[in-house]
Image 1 (cartoon, rainbow, N blue to C red):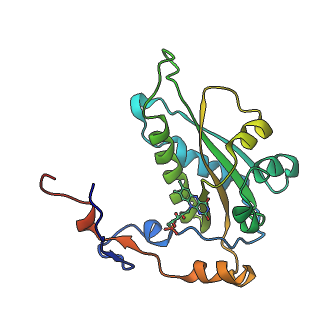
Image 2 (image 1 turned 60 degrees about the vertical axis):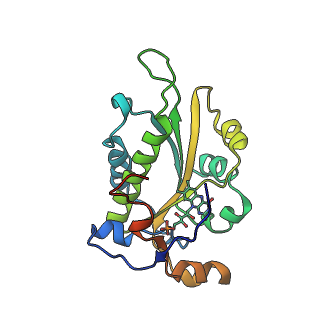
Length: 197
Ligand SMILES: Cc1cc2nc3c(=O)[nH]c(=O)nc-3n(C[C@H](O)[C@H](O)[C@H](O)COP(=O)(O)O)c2cc1C
């Protein structure tokens, strides 16, 4: 495929839901714990995501800061660059997907796709609550598998650091700049076709 320069903009060009507009992957967290009923609502949002054959392959391991043993098992697997700020997140979540269909044990080619959809639902529910969800691919999968005793048959997705918004001033300088910087996205004409390739 030939390379080309794709046009971007930092402006939301058409009307979207407030929670889509407000969501961004922040790194500053408040110490405020997440209320148990709101925690349940986050996973309830994931629960109602669509999935291939209604298989619902998503599985989550979460830990709140007041469960230090489990929280540290999740935290320990993160890359150092993520540890630097995720250390202050009151909630860590590891997302994973069952690789095979429960009914017949055959591989589910859509498992990870469905997990991504469920994570997106969870993320938007968190935004509705005024919480930040920062997804992280930057972690050691083998460490997560060992620390959390994850059996065969699961494919790991992102880890997520979740909590109420904190003060960006608490972040290291380079992260503070990123927290406030405008975000850029490709223009729709770069990825939406109403014609053949
Ligand atoms: C699959 C995935 C993996 C990501 N991994 C990391 C990560 O390891 N560390 C990090 O700081 N951000 C990570 N991010 C966040 C992205 O950098 C972020 O979503 C992207 O820059 C767009 O910014 P926005 O979410 O604020 O719109 C990840 C996001 C996704 C979806």
